[in-house]
Length: 158
Figure 1 (cartoon, rainbow, N blue to C red):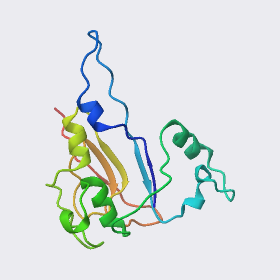
Figure 2 (figure 1 turned 180 degrees about the vertical axis):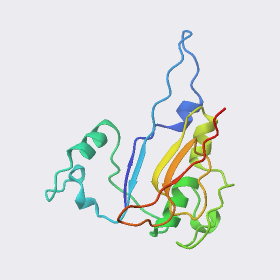
Figure 3 (figure 1 turned 180 degrees about the horizontal axis):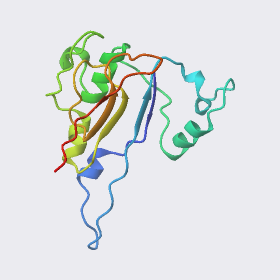
Figure 4 (figure 1 turned 90 degrees about the horizontal axis):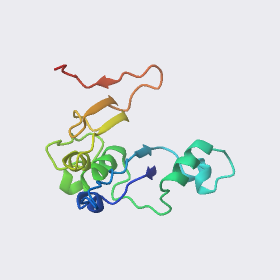
């Protein structure tokens, strides 16, 4: 699994205070996840097999993780670990067929508490509706390879 994380320390954001009556803007945070390929598929990791200049540029302007470990190398549990920061046996998502309990504290909910607007677009694969996101447009399961069906968040106009 490849994870590119342009994450600046949340602690620093949470403790920002005006300096000389100037409030610093919070940094943008973008987490890009893709699965089912090796690190050699991206030239930012030194691959000579394929050129990925746009992904390389994102890495140069953000962060590229050079070492990684997973607590559960299966799609749904890995996603739940990233969302909650908890091991699979603590967040309840032990395999690909388990329902994710969205009532738990998650990174998107913490970001919202610190003034961020959050969104998720793409593969969800957690067998529940996303929580903690201001906007979502997801593939609810594995998805079809041809003409995939997305689930859109119901937006209420006020």
